[in-house]
Length: 305
Image (tube, rainbow, N blue to C red; front, side):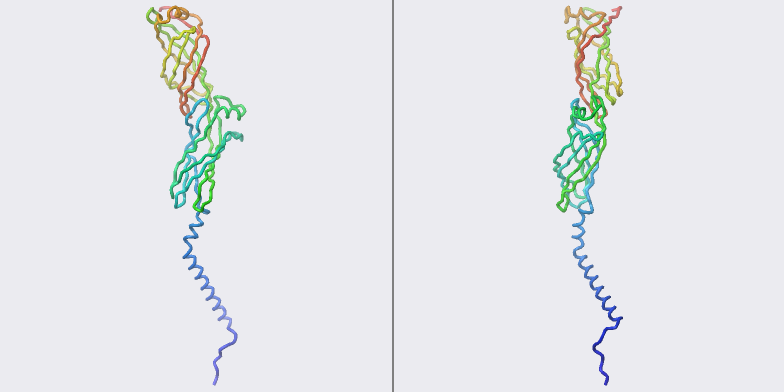
């Protein structure tokens, strides 16, 4: 009777089948564990894959004056996360021609909605005298190109602070008060009850940008005698480094001035003092420009009056 074989070496085909079976079992176990923990792994990896982005929607000047302004950046921030994104702070640096002009840091306590976006304002205070001192060859009336490097600090879902950089280029004006001169006075009708004249004002701008004169407020003295005080609305565009002339009619009662009127109600040169303010619109915003001018002007009287 022949015994069945119960031991001995496994054939080559049997060994290969056993190894293949073991490999399949290990692969199945890996896929099973990945299925159970895959969502958490992907979510934890998102902060390193997705990042918030930012861009400048607008940059404009507020509270423009002869001394300075607020440069306001409207910054749009896009949040790719499924939760709100806390905005921590913002830093900024402005330079022109490689020269650092201003820098600083400001808290920005706000949140960007989940899977959404928001626009936040970053104001930067500017002083024009600082620009003039920092940049060689710059004077009042100039336009200064600048580069702004901004950095927003945000708190990502994994608890890390992330810096979001932005670079923006623009230009800043340094406004200059136009030169105002009373070039001539044309006297019209003169009687015991009324004196009429036309003031010829020359307004010369040395700004490297156009301006539009909306309103002129003035006080006028002739030969140290107060003559007129008024507000004139006479819209007038003045190009860059250009001039314009205003003709302003005035009327007053000579009797109120008494003998003082005799010093200027006629032809010849006469001293004057002119003060007030120009309300001007520029490409960068509205601005009030106070002025004061003293000198001599030509007084001419119509022979028929």
